[in-house]
Length: 477
Image (cartoon, rainbow, N blue to C red; front, side, top):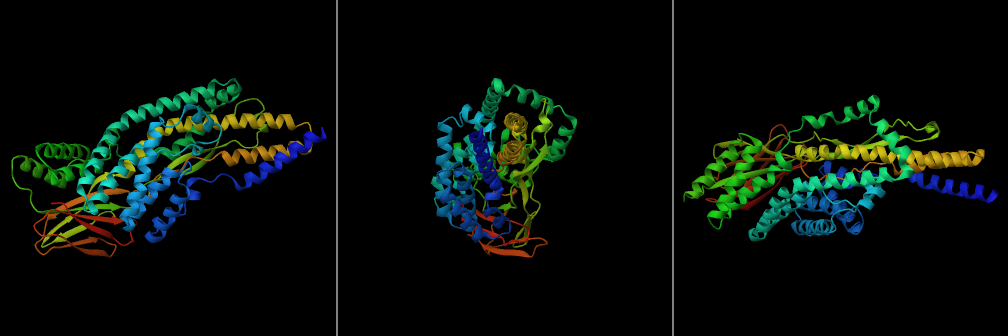
């Protein structure tokens, strides 16, 4: 009995020590994103490079390569950006070859938390990896290498619907496997009753209602890579088939974003090109503004309905939330030789990411409730077994409570260095070669030199409403 008591005390104290440190969420581990949001580009790029190098073999390897790739691109280190995005692509391919996560791993994560699984990337991550690689190649003056990336971005968009179906099927199987375990019978019954509790559902709904306000693009498509596809195959056309592809891409974008006059002008240009007319000298502006949504977590008390649940010391459940960033420039004004235009929205990453989050949310909620009740049931059993001794019982309850709190975190991993919006505009290429770009109300203003009698692309990046505009110029044709 003395040995048993000593063992329980030792285990309890060890859990208390471990639980005091707890499990950190991605946000808590991520020192780069706060620097990024402040517009401290050099510091953010350095921090993301450090994390990507340190974590390249861990479960979070992919997310750090994504962050590093986008941060280095904005910072202007295109070679480092390409290296990070190449590593990200390799990791994505590895996970896809292994058919993503096995059901046994998913089921195991139910007993701890989803953040314990490798981050494999969402479909919009994969599309943007190819898109950024294509843009990097264009800026590096290697447009031929951008072509296969445009094809890959298109295919990844096409695969998204099927991938979503497979994800739902796999996750449903993992949930059913956890429920089928006879040891989880109490937890299953309790979780099913908890999901019907009006107070619990009210608390959940209050945090997710904003998802219904976001525009939903069809079939999980991000319109920006589709627009870039049209722009590429119009200006790097090798024949009628490329022009037909450009036409289809612009038509798809027009169907998704409505009456965007710049997309309609592109449609007119490609139709004329198909009739043999020359492509006019225009200068395009692509504007990346703001920061993409990030994931945070909320804790909601979960009602437990099995007998004796009052003895379980911790019954809070952690759920992910999607937070939108409001600190961004709403548009740019572009002018040259008397022509003035304002950039117009072509893709909201709030909507792209929001739809993905909303689609997976029902499964996340089910998993979280089941996981929490399974752990609470197990804690109740341990506490009951230790109740024969007052000291052991107290220490055990403290230890199980801390242990549950330590693993009860939400998966908040998401690609935070993506922008909030992609905007576009186009003006005739000026003979003066000078294009003026300004952000109304911010005092931000830059001048960009372009090639005369050519098709140019000015790419502008802004992280927050007051950070300096970052611009690069590419001659397309």
